[in-house]
Amino acid sequence: MKKRIAGVSIFLILISTAGFSSQQKNLSLSLEDCILGAMKNNLNIAVEILNPEIADINASRAKERFMPAFFFNISNEKTNSASYSWFDAANEVRSAINEYTVSLDQIIPTGGRFAASLRSYKSDTNRRFQTINPRYGSTLTLDFTQPLLKNFGFKISRREIIIANNNREISKNQLNHILLNTIFQVEEAYWNLVYSIENLKVRQQTLKLAKDLMEENKRKIEVGSMAPIEIYTAQAEVATREAEILQAEALVKNNEDLLKTIINLAASESGDSVEILPTDIPIYEKREVKLEEALVTALENRADLKATKVDLKNKELNVGYAKNQLLPEINFQASYWSPGISGDQILYLDKDPLTRVVVGKIPGASTDALKDALKFKYNNWSVGLTLSIPLNTILSRAAYAEARVSLEQAMLRMKNQEQQIFLEIKTAVRAVQTNYKSVQAFKAARELAEKKLEAEEEKFRVGKSTNYLLLQYQRDAANARSTELKAIIDYNLSLAHLDRVLGTTLSSKNITLSKIERE
Image: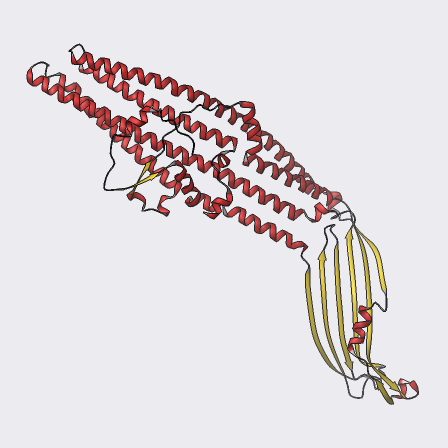
């Protein structure tokens, strides 16, 4: 945590006053404890931290496009039919075909597709005049298709992957932006709670002074040194200050409930039965900030601006893809296949199947066909080009126009965001400088108010002042203390706000996304 200045005397004086209810459990928390508690238990962060995980899953799924696809098909078919000719068979024609196919399909980064398949079959029939039966066949086929215009290129084929990766980066930047805002909410709630507690102590002190004055007035009235009517001024002031304490107590509870909600204290503690006791005091240390350096830092670190820039890349990619889709579709196709055939060779009398006299068989193994196919014994190939021109690419360019308008819109949005960041930085830097000077001014005003009160108390003791004046100086001194407290708190909040608009909150507090995920 940051270095604290021990010279903030007003806090050191007030810490020793005003106890807390002994019936409640006191939980002492530093600002760092509250920030870590919010990182661990805040429900909004718990929801948003899942978005990068979802984006990782989407990116992995997009990469599956280039994973090879494996197919296996097996079939067994038997047919029986009446014989319509004595050339086929005597009574019925019977056929049996067993077939299996193994294929591999792969998309390549250039947008093309490569496929390899191996088909094998066994055919057996009772048809007459067969020279090979049963017959075994195998065919190895290699196919390659490559777009030459439409759908050609590494960016086009990997568009979904690039966008998914960009979306993952956007999601992480958005999470970082939410973390920055949540941390600032914690700091704001924490310091406001500190102020409300210390302001309550100030009000309790002023009430004690008013009651002491009222008791002193009673004693003076009893001895006849003061008119009885003077007691009403002190009593009215006591009643007023008691009402102020009620308001100050309500402010403490409101700020405490807000802090509990942000850090989701109910997730680890027993909620309303816990009373938070802040252990940190706000710093009062001058921080030199140069506007030009702050602007450069913000442009380098702002997570929301980074997300916008990555989204702009997506829009540019979409424009390129839409423009590519306007091109004619020309595909280069090449095929190569190697068949192989084997089986039992039937030998006929006089080598004439018409005699229908089988004199022998030469057995053939099913593996012979497969070996021929794999050894490329019979080479076959084909190449060609196909041209396709859909009319919508000629008559309508709506998708391309939409992508261009979306890109232009994103560029304008980024420029507007940069202008807003410049404005936020200027305002934040000015607030730090102004609030620091305000603390100095209000500190001097508080010291003067306390001196005036001391002088008025001395005058009252010697009878040269009135209840009204003394009570007024007490109120002025109390208001000066509260105002100084508020100025110190505002200065700390302006420093926290500056870190937030610079985008350096996480680094300044040594918080990383991996640390949060481990929590």
